[in-house]
Length: 568
Image 1 (cartoon, one colour):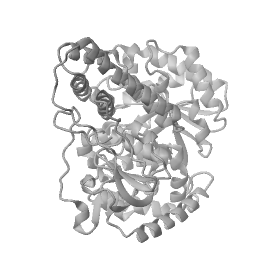
Image 2 (cartoon, rainbow, N blue to C red):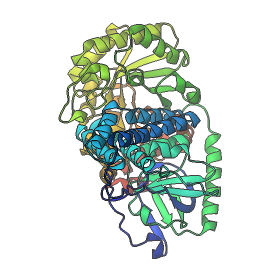
Image 3 (cartoon, rainbow, N blue to C red):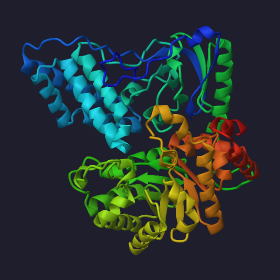
């Protein structure tokens, strides 16, 4: 997403510091590496957003309102076209969800009302999105994570209303490194891997759209990289998506040599196969994260599924999916994974991930409110129907089905959930470790459940009191934070003592550099996007288990994430 233009913009970002990094004779910028790989080339920036002109009188308010609404509808049409062109499922889902936001009747009515009150179309769009943006930020949690999507919609609609091209990604006909304040999902549809070799943004964090989509596309990426916008177009940089370093004003010959070595490394990684093992044979199961049966084709190289997100079945529904509908959706996934583990997460929704049929009341801090298992305890019929559907689906297939609950904080909650799972006839009940309270009492939880799965994205957020979508706090959300690693170590130690499996299913599991550390902390499985399986498999195969334990001790003793990465 390009940097918003002008002080009137609803999405104004901090201005760049100036000073021209490229004039300093080279140097190194440091951000957070979120998608591994090494690539370089000249920098090019996402096209800017047209600045809002001064307001103008509206001679024909109804016609102006129609023009403003038509601009939004053109944005919806363009996002839909891009979704249809994209072959990347993750991106298609995000684009369709973003298009639905632009079709929100409340938003359209706000734009129309603003115009009928005397505001011209571009400013009416800007004001309506500013109101929505404030509401999303105040809601926190999942809705706050969607603010970047709103900003992108606003920028596109304003451009259309002004008769300008929508902001987008350059296509110069040669290889380059794309830089931006942030990248919107729609921007990535036009990314040509033959041209765009790496992504660097000044905003964002480890769980931002840029990070998730870069991993899905296999592009090296660095986020939360201060002053990257000061690097002039055409300056050659070398991006290390593992360490988060961006070297500026690099000799092109050095880039060529680095990329050649990277291709050799990637070829060796691609040649790896089989189950996850350290060099001396210690098993670490490599699993995939999925959202529906449509994802199964991409997980053939996995040992199973470590996170089956069931909430996709519930999204945008006016009624809860029926028992039969849920059973069939789960059966399709289980049938494609006969003989392999499938860890299915019960509905992870609530005040911060609202579902229309739930009709929940507003909460002052939804991320800390009624969500996950807390919602199921308020609405027990939701959980009972879902468990019954999972059990019926499991009976009809040969998959090894495990069931886990999100947002568990106490032993009593874990015991109640495990009882419900076992009563439904399902043998394996577990819980996610997403809040520090659960990590600190992992041993007590394992007295009543069969396994634990660490969601590092939320565990980071709650441990450091840092919103996952706050670029200013991205360093706190770095999975290499020693305090986070210590909580993971607590869980690993509890798993060893109980003789029960514990794993990671957050974004941290996809980091090949971090994988040996996680194994050394006692993780028995790592679950990630399908594209990350081969690099993580190769990283584990290159270390003995004793090496992994040594790296884990060094990372735990580090003072900060940078030092933890360095020792690994």
